[in-house]
Image 1 (tube, helix red, strand yellow):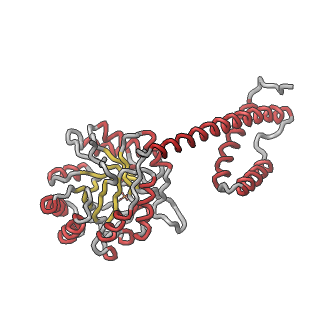
Image 2 (cartoon, rainbow, N blue to C red):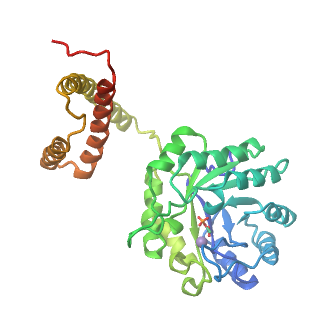
Image 3 (cartoon, helix red, strand yellow):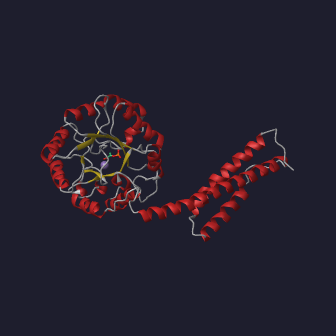
Length: 359
Ligand code: PEP
Ligand code: MN
């Protein structure tokens, strides 16, 4: 069994954003021990976006985490961002290391950390990079795997952007972790609703969404007195609130043992498969028409792209979608792809000197 995979999901990582004092760490661990978490987290070196805020207590806090292990028998994890951090973490028997979002973006840095872990084989959790780049995330994961780390998990903590006030602190951009899972089906993915939402009253909602999407675990920041936390105060929840959140969580599995439900799904999938075949056949016919239109436009010296026609497509298709209760945004994005492909085809015809109109 992989370290991060549990028979009954989710694998729960919880603890304060930062290790603030020995008392805070030990008292939080005592409270979280009662919530039956799997791994206790606390940031020791904090990567703060701007200087001047609390940057963690450094190496001394590793001793507090060691006490958590000894007194409560809880495995512990910290963020490492420098090879020295790894060295110190190992000297203090830290069980699991995590790589922060601001570190994952830099392949040079990630490689230095992976090199420093050669021969250690400590479990590692890799947060997504701050930008929505699935290859960069995957690349970091592969660097640790290639360094011989057998237990690597991904943490989805959302993606930052220049945003107007929004529901999220970091946009979840769910298709990205889904694509990561498609490319690496055996990888455990843990969702961090604390950093995604940035607000404590939204954490449960996103935690449930992660379960609905089939994530393996949750990393949730928990503080005894969230309002007075030295970092990420707005998003931390009390151990008691964490207990309630976990108790209310509906756990979903990818498969069901219920035969009649499996058969019903199988039937629906077959219908869907044939609809998809029709959609693809229709798209192929549409592209043939595009090709023909490209030849006509070429002969009459017209542009491939015609703004008025595109405007008409957007209006008529979104109106039709609306009548059928389909989301307008969805249909527009779909048509952006279709129209783009069609224009690409026509451009290649305009640029090709060998083609003539078929009469
Ligand atoms: C954290 O977990 O406290 C943290 C700094 O996370 P991230 O790297 O996701 O910002
Ligand atoms: Mn934090």
